[in-house]
Image (cartoon, rainbow, N blue to C red; front, side):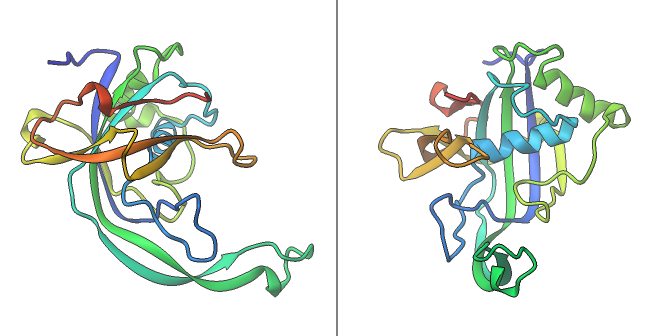
Amino acid sequence: MIEINNNIIVLKVEVPIACFRDSRAREYIATYPVPPPSTVYGMLLSTVGEENRFRHCGVKLAIAMLSETAKSRVIRTVRRFKVRDLNSSKNSKPDYQEMLTGIKFVVWIDATEDRSIPNLAERLDRAMTAPSSVVRFGNICLGESRDLVNSIDILTDKLQQGSLKWLTQDEYGELTLPYWVDRLGSEHTRWRRYTLMNSVDWEPSTQSWTQIQTE
C-alpha cells in the first residue's frame, strides 16, 4: 500500500480529443495509442504554471489508461518548411493525421526525488485545491495547443472503479515512447519500451514508474 503524502498525488485526467504524434511519423501523422510520459509531464507543468521543464526533473510518473480510445483520421494543413520564405504556400500542404477520442487516464506523481521546493506533487495539490493561487497562461493541453484537457481531478476512493491498463516498462514491449524530448533535435530525446497491462489494482507496480530525467 502506497501512502499518499506531500510527495505523492494521484490525478484523473479526461481529454476529449488529442494526437500524440509518433516521433517517427513523417508525411502521415500517426499517433501513439497512449500519451507518452514526456507529454503527461508537460501537461503537469502547464497545470502549475511552470515554464522551466528542467525544474522538476527527478519526479516519477505512473500512467494507467481508463478508457478504450477510438482512433479516427482527419485531414489538416501541415506546415513543413521547404523554402526560406516563411509565408510561401509551398511550406503548407494538406495531410492526414490520426486522432484519438475519449481519452481518460490516471497518473500517479511521486516527487520523492524532486529536489525543488515546493516539489511538483505539492504544487499540483495546491493547484487542485486553490486554483486561484496558480499564475499561468494559456489553456491546459495534452500535447498540441488545440488538444484541450477537459478535466483534472484528484483521484479519490470513490473514483477507483473497474479495471485499467498500466503503462508498464518492458524491454520487449511493443510501445516505444519518449520520457524526455529534445526540443532542438532528436539526439537527446530519451525513450523506453512499454506494454499496456490489464489490471484491477489501482496502485502502480515498480515497473509502472517512469522517472523524468535528461539521461
